[in-house]
Length: 382
Ligand SMILES: Cc1ncc(COP(=O)(O)O)c(C=O)c1O
Ligand SMILES: N[C@@H](CCCC[NH3+])C(=O)O
Image (cartoon, helix red, strand yellow):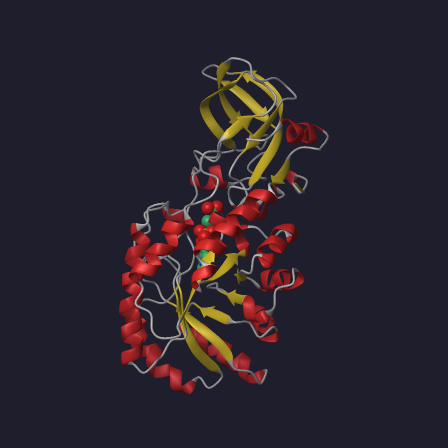
């Protein structure tokens, strides 16, 4: 939780706002350095999880690269001081203009998601007089055991190419003169807390690697994506994911070739726990079946509960009275604008502050102007 000084500083800020604990972010990055980078693994931060410059500055200083999913994300990464050789670019719907941004910055890898995209990229690279480095994203049909909206590696999902397309890929490759196929890419989903799906993924990677070699393609790198989850229930007890166990799955299970690089694209596990959405209680309303605490943040600032039934802890920062039961809801005209239902909290009144925790990833970046709301602000610790 937050110390008294920090809570005091919150009182002078206009709510709602995102608060980022950069100290926790640095400690999280240190764990990645100790257990991942130190083994020679390459880790990219999935900028889609949080694109704020002070966050990117810490990520850059720690020696990570960036995984992008739009031309604007590439531009933001460059603005934050990253160079093209540190950038990968995934996404099923890259526009020609976005591909051109990647080509202009000579990015490390286009993570291509379809055979048609390969042809388009080849044509654009030819026009620019360049050879594009490509990792082909493969859909491994691995069950990630997470919410179905954030599962990406099943054949029914739109991401990557399925194994039955590979003969066509191998036929096409010799004709794609402006493409260098340097790697294979996977990403099976997000908020994965059970390590078994990552073991299953490694087994698929090994099979795919054999298949590519049988077809004369030697791979310089394997990109296993991101997806490692965080503890939304116990953020204070468990602020940093167990990266040691995570990376060990890959140490144990990947069958690497001499000199081959392994790349990761982690988003939530890096930045999730360091962010909280701080909000003020506007009204306490006694309903027929419950008490509603209406706060000034809503699904416009944090959409995850409405979108995925996600559980974000709500902590009261300015009351230690005996507990009462509340539904904590936002001001937006949608029933799904609810952060928590039927939770026990210290009795609160108008003006009290609450922190909606574990909101550093896919929080501020997914905010919207629905109901013509003001854009939410960010505040950073030292
Ligand atoms: C291609 C790709 N890589 C990496 C990530 C980052 O995922 P996570 O934040 O779960 O680590 C995502 C998002 O799920 C993604 O789509
Ligand atoms: N936006 C999602 C995760 C999807 C990540 C991108 N593939 C979340 O809030 O959990």
